[in-house]
Length: 331
Image (tube, rainbow, N blue to C red; front, side, top):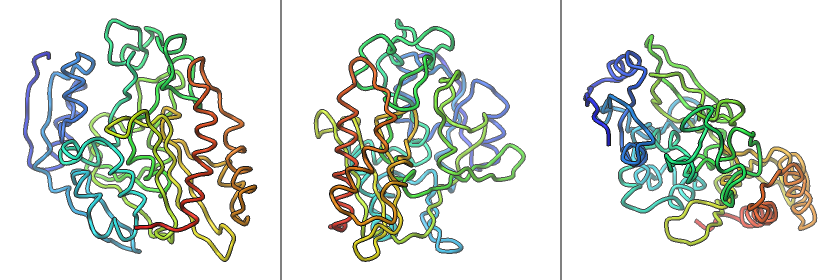
């Protein structure tokens, strides 16, 4: 690990100002991803600004029934909070599907959103990686790309985004509240928060340097009784998703009144399955209609040499997650 300066701050304004003043400075919260990247010489900040003392841990209902989740609330506390378990069980399921209990006890919500890809070419500094070193090439494009993207990739990067929590947040139409350098706050729709790789895969999200996530807001919805997070992985214990599916919906009789579907493990960002949503909304929840919806999404997949199996896995995953959600959340 390379030498770095360590600074601890007591308020959000000081944190933002300190990081903004140094282009090679980063916030430090749980550190469950950043510190690993520093040990591997992938991340090389020369200053860490410790924000763990900031008062950003509250989970509470605010105006219009919106649930505000503090950026520094731990993943475990978020998953087990009564307001989350009762009103947003999809989020609880997704968080508990990720990592180990020890990591969830350390990891923060804001850090979870900003974790970086687990692509082995990104972690191996001997290999080319445009995300790690822009313009160096993409080792995974023609390499062992079994775990990589089937949607939205570019010739510059085929890596996937690893978070489980974020897939649920995408399906729940979350909003990320960010504090800026000038002291103002801006709101980022979750669909706009993470980026596809395009020509700049080194840019994971739309945050500007120094901007600090303050909270994540979830709008009130009618999805609590019909939601499910399905995660398919090589092993049940602490593995990242090959494909995951977050489904939240509301029924009216035998029809799907409204639905949200998001996929993980298939793209550089949480992938909203908008084609599948359009194909099933307003329809009865028959096996044939669910299959048609899944097929509508999967027809645009572009698999790589070693991950063609993900296409069928995603198709079946969408159908299965919809079936479980329609039958009702057992929690």
